Length: 115
Image (cartoon, helix red, strand yellow):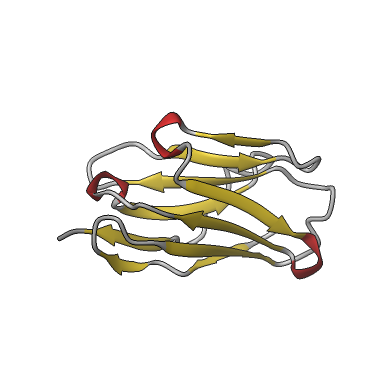
């Protein structure tokens, strides 16, 4: 089982930016698809971005053009750069691989967007 540690969250005003980091406990080079998820209070967890082992990228429509997912395999880390943040982006953000999403979740990192 690979473990992920999310970091980089915080509080920001609408229109601000944050970059989240997802540090994996082992090599992810060409091995894992990694997703960023978020869960707002009272809502189900939803995927916001995905980067496959081959580098293919997916974004949820509501974040398209504002968020950028990337991976640095040498550092075993996946990033989520978030620009032009909106209040509706407020949530706990998690990263995980679909290979183990039924059995493992990290602590996540809180993102709060408010004026």
